[in-house]
Length: 190
Image (cartoon, rainbow, N blue to C red; front, side, top):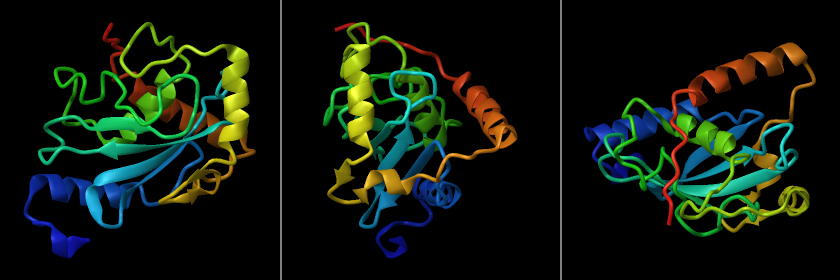
């Protein structure tokens, strides 16, 4: 991958660093660039606990602009989930739909945590949003565990198994909440 890119480019440097930081899966998320395109990443997130999405494993794409991190990524969910339309760029305050909200200090990790945080919120007519019933979302969460990406294979295996230790889980939750608190939950009405 390195031979294809200008290693002096700030975007390339940043993405290489983020790929290294995100190399190891966590219980909540995993993301890596495609082998042939540093500016397209695939990610997998676990549905948030105590929500309609609990137990679900959701996969998507992140398309990064050439001037990342100065401009935000576009986010596309691939797994049916009942909250976001599939194969369509979704509207979040951390996505390309809201460049005015984007902070260059945010990373792909921040975006993944934001996706998890946005899942249980109401779509309220935002671009790419859906408002399925609780039962439909729970059914989709179960089905998502068997979903397979043509590029990545079965996505459930991409995440680290959930920890049984409450202390580990609590520490991770605290860190995730602190990062997610930096993000404004904005909705663009159609």
